[in-house]
Image (tube, rainbow over all chains, first blue to last red):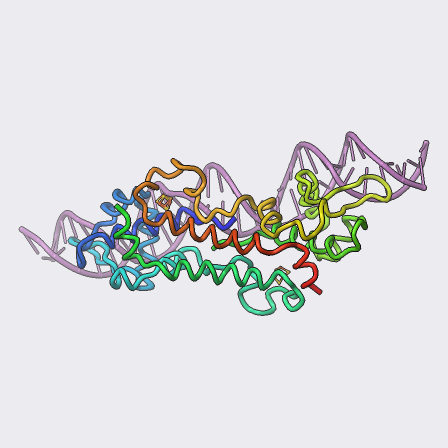
Length: 136
Length: 136
DNA sequence: TATAAAAGGACTAAAACGGTCCTAAAGGTG
DNA sequence: CACCTTTAGGACCGTTTTAGTCCTTTTATA
Ligand code: SF4
Ligand code: SF4
């Protein structure tokens, strides 16, 4: 249960690599993919989607590549994970009332709410900066 | 991320229904399925797998059906969920060393370990009994 | 023996996963 | 301007998982 997909795993590895670079340095997708040991074209898609939401910045043409969109301490692991996997949602009844007609009477509902809260708390509490410095 | 499948959802609903019955009462799969609002043949598979591991007991033939395999306060939500979804495992690197060759140097690894711990803690802390009494 | 269940197995449609490949667009360089 | 480099976007694809159904067999009761 609750498994991160490869997409999520790759996204995290890629962004950590970016965070380990000297600030401002742009890295080629080929370079990131090799360092993170991730299929290049797949990682490209992921970083492109990150560029859209501002987590990374991208530059085209010669001398182009990717950089972090803001400083590593301002990007949380939660953000990265959610960007790629969607919201932390142990059960679909947690998104919006009425998604399950039983939620009013259901004793399990609050448990999922609690699980969600704990996971979000952990993931919100760790920044990419921390991960980058802790990772060799 | 981390979504419970319908199988898991149905399993929980079914077992809660069993827990709400007077102790010792056997219920037909048709009855459980209707009450829990779950496809009958699908629920049958789930309860059959539960019978194998002892969470429920089953009886064939006329007058047969299903009962809890032990008292509701001795069955945790975690057990039910894991029986149907497999172990709580936010990332595959958590099962066994060597499943990721990076785990020695990886700063993310401990975060997943923590997430796993928190979720297990919550799910272990709630019994089917509690859920049954809390659910109308 | 007839009947009432659950058990087991085969099968399936649809979605999600884990990518690849090709073309287009944008930005430097000589 | 022409050419090269690099990301962007879209189409496509094989495999696995999800979410079931259906049919036959076994077991137990009446
Ligand atoms: S029955 Fe309860 S736990 Fe299940 S989806 Fe509905 S509200 Fe959520
Ligand atoms: S890189 Fe780290 S988090 Fe990712 S699978 Fe390997 S050990 Fe786990």
